Image (tube, rainbow, N blue to C red; front, side, top):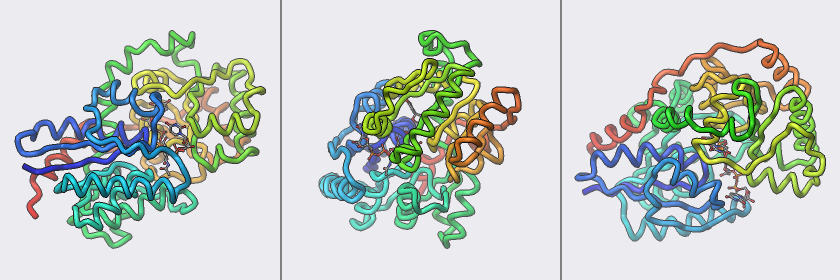
Length: 364
Ligand code: UD1
Ligand code: UDP
């Protein structure tokens, strides 16, 4: 019997690991799959709700590390993960995405001589001011299985000298989750509940430090969203990092009518909100991919993206961080200048099954 231990910590991790936990069930006679939650994200709306929505097993281990500076958060996760790995001695550790939990767990496992599988390997923004970029590079270097979501990832890993035998282009487990839940997403009443006209409202999410940690940037962003909210109702589920900044910078007093701020939403509700939106404006990684899959127009308020397939093939518009450009681009889209998109190769709902199969077929 093999023991495989997956380590998750932040909102997007839960969504990426759910289909893999399910895929390993098929091998339950050969595999014991354990789930370790670092506690990086801890609010009900950032964590527990996803386990409920996606019918995921409760974590076998909960490390309760919470927030903190990069060094302190990463270090605490490392110390706690080390104890779990020492006790369970897994044959493989699986880490999804690019958050501090991903980095910490992959470092600890690899130094203990435990093979590591990175789900969503090879993505690169080529911008080391993003903490995620450092997490991606380090995790890939120490990983034994590099499971890649789009062709750019394969090229990046080859350019960095990774051996082809470690690279597997398998598709996207975040899209597996969307594919598996699409009927529920389409049926969810969130748009009606918020009194929105389907196809005629905007959704926004922001949480990148470069956009929300600075008073001027967040102020300008809120002003732009406020202006767009005069054109269409605009729903903005607010990430805890962003909520803290809105409060700290005193921006809560200036929220204009038409701009609807909500708590972070559960998975099915939020995906449904995006499904019927005319436009999504975001700095999220995963949302660029989900809008591409659903064919919804997406403006990404960043200077770069590690997910170029969403630009080349999908419905994503990378516009930079200048607010004039963001507003102009949004107005163009609301005026009908939209971009057609296709679903990227291998985003077919079967990535997790491919990953499980590759792991099970692997001979040391
Ligand atoms: C993290 C990831 C980021 C990812 C995002 C997904 C890193 C370096 N960053 O960013 O890549 O895109 O998650 O959402 O790993 N907080 C709460 N309640 C929660 C979660 C967080 O209050 O449930 C607070 C924390 O205490 C902290 C702040 O929000 O003050 C930021 O949390 P943290 O996990 O450090 O980074 P994120 O911005 O969430
Ligand atoms: N998401 C959600 N509720 C929200 C906002 C986002 O369920 O209120 C989902 C989103 O659809 C995607 C994931 O959370 O599946 C992305 O998380 P986030 O944007 O926090 O992280 P990133 O992808 O940028 O790392």
